Amino acid sequence: MNILHKIGNGVYKAGLAAVRGLTLILLGVLTLCSLFWGYYAEEMVTQASIPHREPVLLHLACMALLLLLLFPLLRLSRSGNRLKSLLLALALGLTCFWGLFLILFGRSLPTADSASVYAIAQSLASGQTGVIHPTGSYLSYYPQQIGLVAFYEGIIRLWNLLPVSYAAYHILQCVNVALACAIVYFQYRTVCLLPGGDEAAVAYLFLSLLNAPLVVYTSFVYGEIPSFAFLSGGIYLLLRFFYRPSPHRKSRLAVMACSLLMLTAAAALRKNSLIVIIAIVLVILWEWLRTHRHRLLLWAGGLALCCAVVLPAIQKVYEFRAGNTLSTGVPALSYIAMGMQESDRGRGWYNGFNFYTYEASNMDSAVTAQKSKAAIRASLEAFRADPGYALDFYADKFLSQWTDGSYFCRQATQNHTDGRIRIVKSLYEGELSPAFNHFCNVYQLLVYGGALICLAGMRRRGEEHPSLLPYVGLVAVLGGFLFHMVWEANSRYIFPYFLLLLPYAARGLGMARKAFRPRKNTGLLP
Image 1: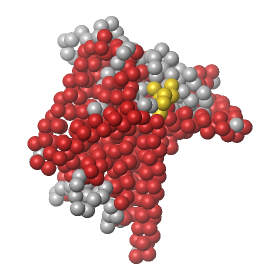
Image 2 (image 1 turned 90 degrees about the vertical axis):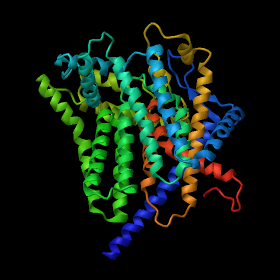
Image 3 (image 1 turned 90 degrees about the horizontal axis):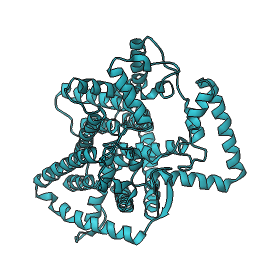
């Protein structure tokens, strides 16, 4: 048994070293790239992601100004919990205020996929089950949306009970505002659990006050905000189980059960959340190698099982209600093939290949998969014939996703009804649009840089009992980077990983202030 323990500890340390090294490289590249480049759309018609050379000195000056505002707050953080309570109330209040402001005066409408999901949820809420159909339904192209449809149907059914005439998407946007506040709260509580003390908590709340993309996304009727709210809650409860365990066994079991349920809900609402779920499962399995707590294996297995069956189970319920079936949908290979092709929006971005190939194949997933394999082979041959083109292609694909500080929030919410006020219009294509883009890119640089400092500091601490648990968000970011270099590209898909970096950036900014603080033993770390 001792030999097995030694082998397990050796594997654990190797995994920890690999995560530290790879994420340090990734964050270093992200920080440098976001300093010099920014990819964002200049207009909302083609929505093409265009590369821009960033004004480096201006961005550094703006970052210095933000740090000058932050560092005095960090000095006051040791005065007690009053400052944290005030900042938390301010962060939640402003998130709520600006979210409702955009609902009232931005007048964003569901569009494209979000409009399809919303329309299906409306139909089901009114008892029309004809939208469950093997060929004549959006869900037969994209059955992975069935969990989000179920979530929206429940809310719309409650909304329809009220004597109001407003369209139901307004309440879905209001729910997004509440869930955005939940994201801020859960991430704040997560920061309080991890090493870094009051300074990291204050730094996180400061960053949350600047999070413009999160506020804009509250008007987007889709799965980003709901799924990440459940993800952040599930991660918080998981870390609470390890770092603040209750002395009562039933309480500990309840915390882990609630964490499992919230993470399962996240996977149901947005299938891409499985990348974060896989990262969590891997970290728990790695933690088992160190602690040999067999209940961790049971929990990880339960989470994997629940996330694997939740969408098929919801689909079966709807098929039973409708007395009909859904098709298996567009195969994953089509998204991979599309991610290797040119597009007007950007390299590897959506160009309709998955949809049109599936439709031309009479919605036969097997035939579509074969055509997608042929397209992948054609792309690989083109890359082999011209390695320089391949390098440029994937460099652009990487930069167009990870250096767009707005994370596609304007494109996702640009469709609107009459009544959008002038100042909101100017954020999309008016005089405020360049300023908004530059602000988002400065904010992105601050977060990337702060996360890089945090990781460098965590590596230098030389912890006596190192654990992979604090790195769970970074493992997910690393997985997201690898996945979206293969999958269809879009900076919107990167936004959840950016949010995962916020707690690390907060801790890193706290470390940065200590580096500038006069002390006898100067250094980066406490």
